[in-house]
Length: 128
Length: 135
Image (cartoon, rainbow over all chains, first blue to last red):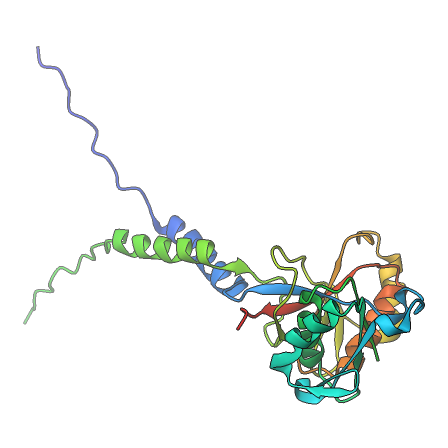
C-alpha cells in the first residue's frame, strides 16, 4: 500500500500589507516624535494674592531684552543671578517679584523665571 | 526573421532584509523619541532650566511668533480666550494648564494671554520650555 504522505507545499506569506503598515507607523513616529527635552515653568501673576506683608522681604527682579536683569535696581549678570538670589534668601528674603519690561521676549521671561524658581523662594510672582 | 524573446518572468524581490531594517528604525523612534506635546512645527520654544520636568501635559493653547493664538487648533483672539475656556466642558480646570508660546513673542503679549486664561477659571498656568541642562 502506498500512502500519500506528501506534505502540501508551503506558500510564502504575503508581506506587502505588513510592510505597508510598518512604513506607515514609521512615518508617523518620525514626524510626531521629538528628541527635545521639555520642561514647565509655572507662572503666577502678581494679582494672584494680595501684595501685603513685609515689603522688605520682597526681592524685585526686572527682566529686559536679552535677559538683562536687575535685582533690587542693581545690574546683575545672568550667570550670577542664582548666586545673588541664594545670598538674598539667606538674608531672610521670602518672595520674588519678577517685573517684565516691555522689550523682553517670552524666552527672556521664562529663562529668568526658571532661574528664580530654582533658587527656592516660596513665592514667585510675575508682573508687567 | 523571428527573434526569440527572452523569457522575462519577474521574480519577486526578497523583502525580508528591508523589513528588518524598517522594523529597526521604527523601534528606534519608538524608544528614543517622545511624542511632541504640540503639533505645530514652526514653534521655537524658549530655553529654560525648568524646575518641573517629567511628563508634560499636551499644550492646547499655542501662541505663535506672529501673535496668532490657537486654542485646540482653532484661531482665537485674546478677548475670546476666557469665554472659550469657561465653556469648554472637556477641560479640567483644576489641572495645570500648559501654554505653548514661541520664545520670540513679546513677553507682555504672553502675560496678557495668561491673564485671560486665569479669568477663564484656571488656577495653575505653566509655560512649556525646552529644558536646558544646568551649566
